[in-house]
Image 1: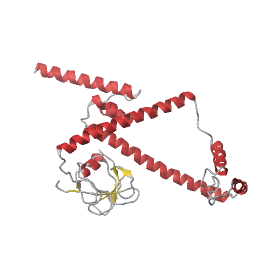
Image 2: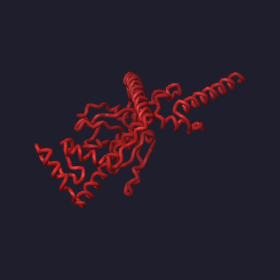
Image 3: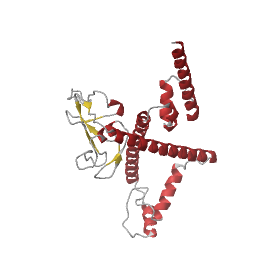
Image 4: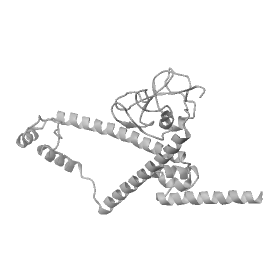
Length: 276
């Protein structure tokens, strides 16, 4: 732990510090958080987050910095121009019983998530077979206006006007008929687009967290090819790339290549041991 710190982490939503004395987490939970093995719930706003979505601050200059689980056993710099120091991340002792319990818990969670991904992929495949395409922009706009008049939308889909509670359908229809201010329409469209970009960034961060946790847990469980089916499609592809295997085809085909590669490597190792 030379040159290492228990760095400060903060909730991405409410910015409260994670791991404080009143949060109910143990010291060794810092290991699990920083290795990407678990996500934790903010004690203040109940937001679930992990090391990829948390805000990390440098222990030397207190400025935010980017973190990835692969940095946990490294000495890094925070990247801020006025901070030139290097630091590592504290490694706490973890009782054997706690580690065994975490392995069992992590495996169950990985299996649950793998089944969820398979179910979601099956739904997407069924929708593709049915040929149900997405609605056009005009169709979505018309549907939004119908929902607004029916009182099922909180704001006008054209200008963003929020009517008071208890307004009648006739009044909503009247507003829609008089809603012709192009500047208000443009401003509302820009606000909707900005909100969409923020949602996309949050979704991207959540996806990165899920991918990092998926790989970290698989490695924590031993990184055995017999359990590679627990990996996401992205992680299976990366494993094939690292082994110099083809990455085309389905996940099942890539897993078969990994198994064949591991079997051939084992036969080669056994043969060399026999000749010795």
